[in-house]
Image 1: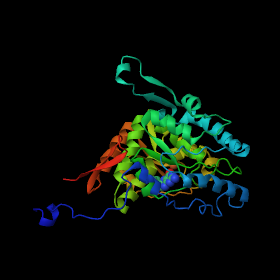
Image 2: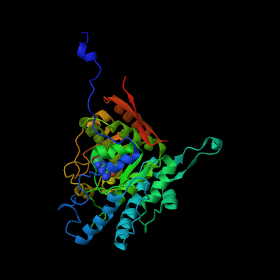
Image 3: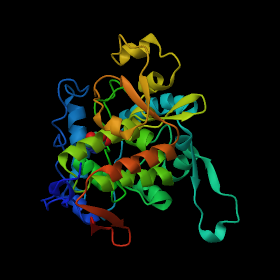
Image 4: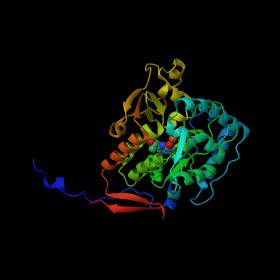
Length: 359
Ligand code: HBI
Ligand code: FE
């Protein structure tokens, strides 16, 4: 029938959750869920290692003291830490050749207008990271060098963080093209396992994709959608982020390739997600006793936003997009479908959010 009067009234004004309006206000985002140390529970491999805990505390303190505009803290990593990095770097490197998506393995940059007549600048990603950011088997790169590199490529910068943040604070920063990155490394006892994000996950999982302009735009889009969003919508966006940026897959011809950082930074999850037949050893490592392979669904953000996910085992259900552009388009559509009291836009000149009222 005809709509009732309440159906056509504009949304009533409401208080919105606090959000940063200026990039400096990210300094106010200090409420990590773990407080920087408490996340080390009995399950953490470093729980019973006082020297590890002290070291983690030291590195976390640098992140807590950091203020926008300062130089990113440099960490002098120990031989033991570098050995952990090396183990991860070597093992993942060979798997990336096989299973990482094209956008992770190679780059292409848009050139300034006066250069348009030349060939587009493109090539392998890793040599770039080695040349400009200090990536090497025997060196843990510094966040500052990576941040400078990304800023020149896509305008993304890194900010050090002490551990897991709330989904809202984490996503809000993406609106400013800022990515929070941990700086400590996992425990040396098991270089192939970490229950929390660490520098291997950030640098080998997330960072190379932030040099890709389409990926950078798509990340910022999720960030903008999270500003002043309701708790319910933040939870939906966090799930969409989880099933794309963290555990997303991309189809390349007949193959399924790793796109999410959680897949790209874990050899076990990469085999689980990308191998035709994941080995029994792999399945046991991820506590997947019954299931032989992940259930792959075509990426539908609405469905992903409602899909539950475990955080201690491998993913039983994963989403596969047809391409990065396909993922970008669908997510933009999803973000537009959320009800907003206004439309935030980012002004990169002032590094400020501008707000336009919804009509
Ligand atoms: N915090 N530091 C950090 N790193 C993450 O990847 C992260 C987080 N907090 C929340 C979060 N990821 C997830 O909720 C995403 O799905 C948003
Ligand atoms: Fe991550």
